[in-house]
Length: 562
Image (cartoon, rainbow, N blue to C red; front, side, top):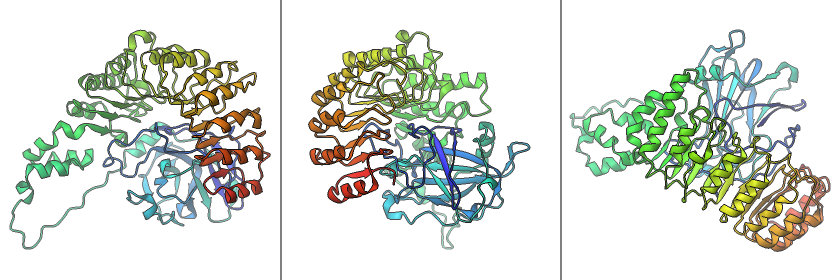
């Protein structure tokens, strides 16, 4: 992941950053980590049909999905900064926090201060009024920044996830950047955060002491409780015996999203919640990871045992399970229990370690209902992935982006063709880029239901383009094609796709320097459903050409370096 800061009147700087507590839900393309200017755009269509939908809006009303944390070497005053929106959509930045860091002790001296928070709105475009020119005055200068994002409010993604624009002319060297904070330091700071507290309401002067809540019918209380988040539900359970009994109803816990409370989850409170998850259908425990410094070996084993008990108790009802970024809690026993859930439809294991699993044949039972599998950023190897694919014959969406432990694409494609004929989505960006796979890609033509193919930075070596003709002739339902960083891709190579794939709506071709203006014209003319084209870093496409296309084909958005 790459984050960039922009200082007015100064050159750009860029640094690599890895989120401390959890990574983005999808790997970004940083175009070989080159420094990008403010106007440089990388089209990355969002809202994909295999994206995870929120389980409980009440628990995460702002939809904060991922977080960046970074620091400066010396304290700065946040009133000198403003947020520059990537686009004019609302609520992309959900919250911005600031805190003081003592670099000598490397500890947090003060609390995290909320500098900005998006407004509630189901339709974000209605409430958007732009980011503030000045943030609220922080009680003290800060060196640590924490920014929470929801990128789904953007129509397109950018290389630059966020920009901090310096309002005053300053020398760049005055604000050098360092790597992200240590996880323990951040955790200590997060512990000082407090959830929203319900203000105390003074009784009315003419109140006669009547308890209106006791007079409410049980049906109305059930309806009210069903609209509460988990924290509010827990508070209501402490009011009286009747409310406690109602709040303990298992039907309120059929869709549980614990990633919002990741900083509070541990073996103790998870154990108390376990009995309420007996009929859970959707469970998201993302970011409840080993980054808590209090987690030692015994705590991890306890946590893992509780997770296994939850899965065992809800195995007949569980349909969606998300364990993204929970590295130390996925084990061979955990996988055995996961594959013992016969109704599981969606399994997300992003950024997990599978190195401890030796025998995948014993860990995987047949899952006839599984439709979505996400193992991106994980350490899964070919043998483990192949074993899973063989046991999931109805799989439709396979996500394995940036899996550095996968080296040979041939056995995986062969397995998918033989065991997963209904596959609709294949994403393997920044994976399989070391192998000689020039002939293997022809196997994609056997997946007649394929709708989304992402092979960014997976150019075959030696280069071979005849497989595109096979895909075009046999995968005519194709809607999105991503071939970023294919240096040898030419106009002639894309001709079969532009001729036969009439349902294509997104064509993603960044850093394909041999693509010409002729291809864009033909795409706009031949593809009635085309909405977005990315020709980022295409040397033969000029700004004037893009403007001409935009004027002639108003239904198509074409993006490149301005």
